[in-house]
Structures are given as C-alpha cells and as structure tokens.
Length: 608
Ligand code: F6R
Image 1 (cartoon, rainbow, N blue to C red):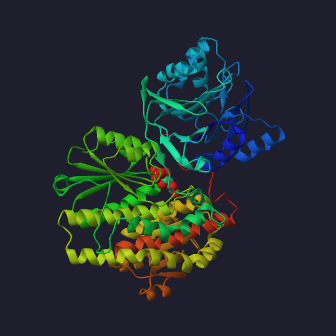
Image 2: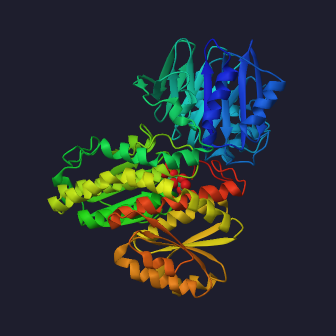
Image 3: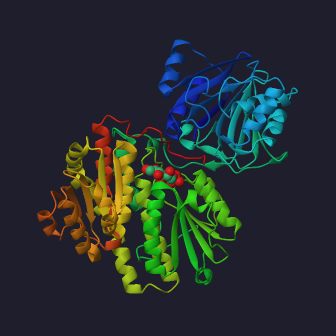
C-alpha cells in the first residue's frame, strides 16, 4: 500500500527520488520521507501529509546525495505522523529502511528486540526491520539484511541503505512488488514502473525472496543465498500515459480513455474475420470439457465485473459459475478440485486478498485464469492462463477504464470458450462479435452525450445524505458498481438494490425527494423495472431513469430520463455505467473532494 523509490548513481538522488515518489502517490499518500547518504553522513527528512510537505521541508533545508531511498505511505501500523513515516533508522542512525507491506510477526520480534535493549520511536511494524539489521550487522550489510529478512513473516518489499556502505543499495522483495531500473552508471528501485520511466525503460521484476545488492554500475540478485539471473524487460508504454493529458483529474481522463482502452482490448484479440486469438490462454477444447465449475474471485469493482462475467459464461459456455469476493472466498470451504477453473480479476494484480484466494485455489488443484491490467504482476505470474486488459495505467483510485475493459475481457472469454465448447452457434457468434466491435464508438458517444446531464444530476444530489440505484439482471450488477463509485469519491451513502428486493425491506428508506437512479436497459426485465420504479415514485422518490432510446414511455414515469444508444442486452452495462461514473466524478468535484485520492482509500490494496 506504500510506494518505494531508491537511487544509486552519480546524480542528485533527492530530486530523482522525489520525482519517483510523485508518480507513486497513488499507492498511498498519508506521509512521505527520504534518506540519502551525503559524504558518509545519513541525512533524512520525513513528514506527515502529502508529498508536498516533504518537498517543502527539503526546499527549506536541502539534503542531497548520490545514494538514497524514499517512501510514500498509506498507514497500516500506527497513525500517519512524522514518527511513523519512513525511512526508519536504527539507534545510531547509520542504517535506513523503507518498507511496503506488513510484517505479521512484528510484535514477537519487537519484544525480543526490546529485551535486547533496543528502543523504538514509532508504532510501525517496519521499525523492527532496521533494528534487526542492526542486531545482525557485523560489517556486511547484505549479510545482515539476509539474516534479518529470514526472521520476517508477512509481505514486504524493502529498500535499505547505510552510511557505512556508501556504494550499496539493498532491495528485498517478498509478496510485495518491487522492480529494479537499469540505467547507465545508475540503478533504481521502485514499487512500480511510472516511478522510474522518466529515467529508464529497462526493468527487472524481482521475485519472491530476491535480495538485490546494487552498486553504481552493477547489481547482483540472490535468492536463498544463490546468485540468480533475472530477465531485463523493455517497457514500451510512455510516461505520458501516466500523466493527466490536460484533464483536471486522472479519473476524468480515464473515463474519457475508455473507448480507446476498449478498442485496444478488443482489437488485439479479434481479427477481421471475427476469429478470436488469445495468446496467453492455453485451455484446450478437451480441458474445457473437463471443467465442471468456475469460480470468479475478485474485490470491489473487479468483483462487479465478475458478476457480469458469471452471467456471460453461464449464457455462452453453459457451465456453473460462482462469483465471490476474494476476502470471503479465501476463508470459505469451497468446492475445488482439478475440474475447477478459478478466474481471478484484478486491475493491479497485487491485491492481497485476491492473491491469497488465487493461491488457496491453486493449492487445491484449480486451474487459474487471471484477468489483469498489469503485465508481470503477482497475479499474472502465478496464473496458468492470463488475459491482459490493456487499459493502460489506471491512476485514479476510483476504477473506471479497468472495469469496462474487464467487462470486455469477459465478453471475449465467454465467446471464445462458447465456441470452443461448441455451445455457441456460428451465426449468433458473428452477430455478437460484430456488435462488440461497435462498442468503442457507442461508449465514446455516450461519454459526450451524458456529460452535461451528469453535472446537473450532481448539483441535484450533492447535499443528499443517501442515494439508491436500482436495477434488475445485468442492470443490478451495474447498480452495484454505480453505487460504489458514488460513495467512494463523493462520500454520499449510496446503495444498490435489485428492484424486486425493495419490497422485502429497503423500500422503507424511501421518503419525499429521496434520489433513486433506476437502470432499465435489460429489455426482458423492462416491465418489472418499471413497476419497481412506480413503487418508489409513489413513496415520494425523485427518480432518474437510465434506459434505451426505444423506451420513451419512461419519460412519463420518471422525473428525468437519460437515453442510451441501442445494443444487445449483454452489452448495455458498458453504456449504462458511464453516466454513474460521471455523476460520481462531478458530485465529488462540486463537494470539493480530492477526486483522484479519496479519503481512507489507496489504489493498490496489498495488505489484508
Ligand atoms: C473501486 C476500486 C476497488 C478495486 C479493488 C480491487 O473503484 O478501484 O474496489 O476494484 O480494490 O483492486 P484490483 O482490481 O487492483 O485487485
């Protein structure tokens, strides 16, 4: 949940580390700090609050050095404060450590260290790491780090420097992402690629238990005391892709990127004849026949995409599909055997609960297929089959383009497996694929046509304490995602109800002027949704309808109606989610909230 940047080279590390931390702020942003080695002195600065506080302090009291580590934090152990900010130093302040992850056995280790005479300045789990290194230190920093990490349980990526070793930067990875960047006469360490992309395109993904020792022009990677080689990968995407491109917020930019992201996800897979090619999916027709049950496992928005995936797979592949949230799935006694396919959905590919669910399922013999946006992420590396969404980096905490491309992933996979299993008739298949290709343009048109309406609705709801989304079938799944978007950035209480469930309790919440947004795009359930709308309307609700062009009668029932282009029922969720995304965006904007970095949330949830 935190971000790490490290530098060793000839230039001023402070500037490079601050630049990198800025690109990693999406990983956490409640405090930041850095430490550098300056003429055999260890100097550091660390501050509660956003990165700008750290920058300000360094402007007032400059520190510099050609070796350094930095950190942006999202608190887990200990509140955000200067003391709890990283780096953490040993008592003599000659070793500094930054950490991303959680040390599960830190209380036992802390007691052991206190008994040995160590004193602690922070409430963090990280501080035990630096004292452990200090304890094992006998002149060899790498040796001390290796002994210290042997004692740790949990998840951690670490950056370590010492003033006693001014030509050495140590990086450790276990269950938390960490990469090395390879430059000319300089090396970098980072939690994610945007942090170093301005400086180099050559990266090495560290693997679990890797301990890397970096000097100015070379590096060695050890794993379990063995020297190992790791492939150097060339990063093709541009740093521009990780900047705002003139939009006020990443979220707005990412909403507008959806047509392109969907197109990229589609076009790399479907050729002009409508055939689907999936380079990282190796399931054969024979293997598919043996799959008797599918679990779709994910968190938050990715789970909402999974609900639609369940519907699609059941429809086209005729297989039993169970969708579950990862934090529950990992502790359930699930029916998993060699005949089970588990589909893991994760934008980041690093979500702790999702990763744990993946491992749990794998250990029981399930085949793992992942849908992820990050190449080389932990989820991708641990799966047998991978579908990359190619949405490009998603920086805003509120997921938008990752969600719509996850839906596209499920469309493609269901069509592909449907054909492979022989359940999907050729003409129907081509009809669906042809319509699928139309969707980037329809999504684009929708973004522009609903923008102004979204602003008006945001004005109307901004002071409300509650809002409800209702829908049926696939519209219910969209409602779940719509409600999550609104609550996470506008802080308005929003809930989604299956329209038919209202009468079983929730309708008691409706009073005069309660805003209800009804999604009514599923034509087979349209009449049902209309009667649900009438029931909330008659209790005083202010109802906004989202429907297809043909349902003009909704205008006489709702207070406001937004019409969408026509498409197949299965594709309407791609169009109907756009207005809720924009309503959430504009409501948060009007309320003066930090749209891209909502309170209490971080982009990548790498701890349980
Ligand atoms: C909400 C949101 C989260 C994520 C969830 C899973 O807008 O972004 O609900 O969808 O934390 O994250 P990933 O997909 O990275 O596993």
